[in-house]
Length: 264
Ligand SMILES: [Zn+2]
Image 1 (cartoon, rainbow, N blue to C red):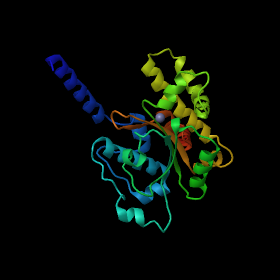
Image 2 (tube, rainbow, N blue to C red):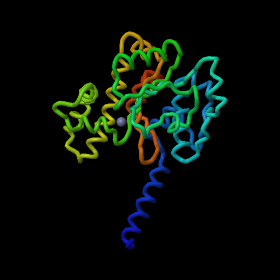
Image 3 (cartoon, rainbow, N blue to C red):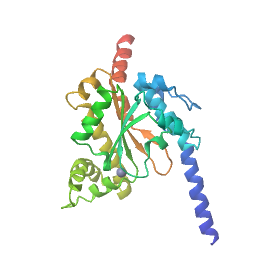
Image 4 (cartoon, rainbow, N blue to C red):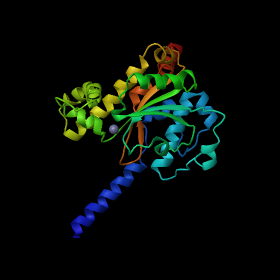
């Protein structure tokens, strides 16, 4: 190996680890959610009762994972075998079927914590809606997260706008098409367009769920459930929650109005 190659590998490692060290969320999201520096834990029962707290629990869990500090909670044989009392998952995750995005591992959560539905490109149809509504209505799970990820093959496929996708794959391509068309209009580099489409796809899926009649739309408006979007980085292990899906939550929109009116 020549020295140029050694240097290139060294630079690659240094940049990889410096990316891991950066904060996961934007300063605005940090502030709105009240995230604390050097905090890695959030109590489970509070996360089930309060979806904003649940969000913090996911963020702190992902921070443990990304920084190689995972504690693998509630994952013993005994945890798996002692579930006669039912389940109280604090979050519903709508994620991609990609084998590199194991939800419990990347959020460092355990048995009974996450209610998960996964399809390629986290495209949803009737059965997914029923699954999410079941968690909301029957299990009283109040936090819903749409989780996209970097290098998503389903979004990549949709970016190619294939004429005749095979079999039922057409369902996936059609659902992701609006996001891929949006990204193509930006005329960025191919990688940047893919990232834009991945991001846009999540935002559109969040909006779809927020307006979904008759259950989710009503519960979302009342603030009984919160629906947010995030993108997972395969390289850093970080899950970044999309700012516009946090700032547009009714609780933060209302508090903005309230602080605005109290000043006058
Ligand atoms: Zn994917």
